[in-house]
Amino acid sequence: MEMAAPGWGRVSLPNLPLPKDKSIEKDLREMIALYKAAGIRTHAWIYSLSGEYMPQANWDIYKKRGMTIEGESEKTTIRWLNPSHPDVAKIVSDTAIYLVKTYGFDGVHLDYVRYPDFPANDLKSVSDKAKFMQYAKLKQIDWSKDIAIDGKYRQQYDKWRSKNVAGFVRSVGTSLKKAVPNVTFSTAVFGEHPKCVNTVGQDWYTWLDEGLVDFVVPMNYTTDMNYYRELVSVQSNPKYRDRVVSGIGVNSFEGLLNVTQVFHQLRFAGFKKLRGVSFYSLEEYLDLEVLPALELINDSKKK
Image (cartoon, rainbow, N blue to C red; front, side):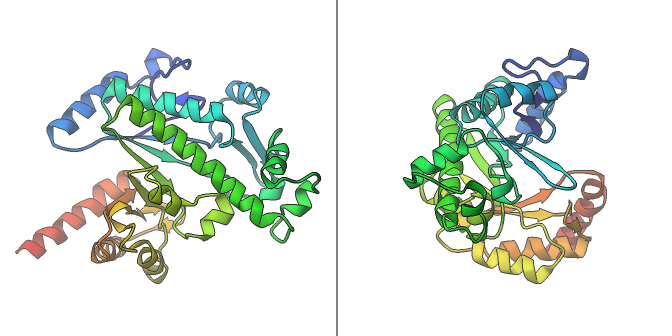
């Protein structure tokens, strides 16, 4: 269930009250109770670092505290919280702990656990330059030029960013598990590894190696079955596949899948023995057309 992000929430959160007429607190408790009775787990879905929908007042506060990253392109403004800032991890972990303890969620799922999918050398932060120079032991740097794709410090920069994201995941997960030991902790990730290490700082193989998360959900959102097979074939490495849930983009930004496409992607993930699948997202098309059709297919196979 999409529940929160730094600066906004579906329910009242610590230091973030919500008008009662807009709150879903009563309905949420009823829904979770019904799911538990039916043996269905519920996970709180949190936009962890994206500031896309953040109210301006909250953004101004975070920016003043040096917690933000910004970027400008011709068509959009990038607003992001900085994973290297310790207060960012605390805000997210406090939110996650509150949701689990208050409403009884079985798990927490973090989305946007990465840097923006945007040219790295065009992103601005009040502290990143100094932090990177300290990490790389540099006395001087041409900040935009040297960290560009072909810049002389680009490889070190990519490693530094992946270290920051891993540190964020570690901090949130450690705080969450300490407060609620039995909770399940998962993250959404880009499907192409190791490409995503360099593009957005997501070295999720390392997260799995170090046990920072219980499982990951690669966003394998595509209408191209061959491409989907390529992604899942790599993700089905026996070392990781029992902690990989394939994200199937039924109605994602990347395109709309018909029932046949959904079935084939679902079946291939099963053939490769992944932990499971995740359908994105539960809207009218998936609820009223795709899921009933899959149920009919399942019933016919049983016969």
